[in-house]
Image (cartoon, rainbow, N blue to C red):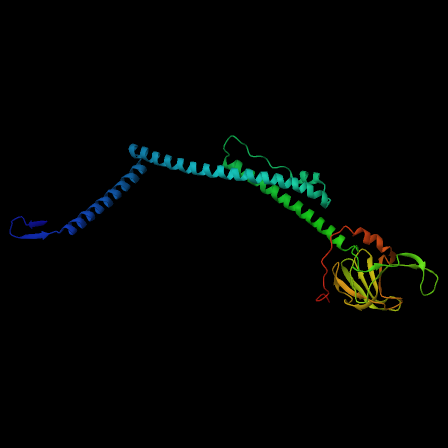
Length: 316
C-alpha cells in the first residue's frame, strides 16, 4: 500500500510504502492506543460521576457493589456452613470423649459427677437454619473452654493412674527366684542349728548356686554387705517403711544407693552365712517388723510379668 503526502501548495510530496506486516502492526498499535484512551476516559468519567453523584454512574456503581457484596456473602455463607459441619463433628467427638472419660474416671478414683459439674455440657448446633458468625464464634469459644476443662481432668486422671501404677510397682509382689522350690515358710519352726523352736522370719527358695535373684519390687538399695548370719545380703527400700531382704547370696550385683527396677537381677543364689545349703532367704519388713512374704507374692500372681532389667549402668 502506498501513501503520498503533499503540502498545501503541492510543492513537496512524500511517498510512504506500507507492506502487509507493517500495516498489521500499525493497526494493532492504533487499536491498543484507542483501548488505552477509552479505558482512561471510562475510568475518569466513572470516578468523577461517583464523586459528584451522577445518577447514571451512581446506579451502575450500586449494581457493581451489590453484585460484589452478594458474591462475598455467598462465599462467606459457604465457608460458615462448612465450618458449622466440622464443628458439629467435633462436638459429637467430644460427647464420645466425655463418655470415655467417665468410664476411665472410675479406674482413676475420680467421681464422674465431678467431671460433669466442672466441665459442663457443650450446646449442640441448631439444625434447620444457617448459623451466624457470632453464633459460630460463641460455639467455638464454648467448645474451647470444654476442651480445656477436659484436658485438665484427663491430666488429673493420668496422674492418679500413674501414681497407682508406681505404688503397685513398689510393692514386693514378684517372685524373687523364678526356678526355685519353696522350702521353709514364714513362722515358727525347729532351728536346724540349735534344734530349738525359733521364728523363721522369711521364705526359703531352694535353688542351685548361681541362680538369678530378682528384686520383688522397685526401690533403692539401702544395704549390700556381708552379714554374720545372712551372709551376702541385699536390702531394698520400697518406700512407706517397706523393705525386702535377700540373704545367703553367692554374689551381689548391686551397691548401696542403686536404683532398682521391679524384676531386676540383684544377686545370685548361694549358701553364705548361717545356711545349710544353697537357697535364697527372702524377707519382707514393714517398719522393721517381719511380715509373711507369701501374702505379698500371692497378691502378684495375677499381675503381668515385668521385663527383667540388667544392673549395668545403674550404679550411682
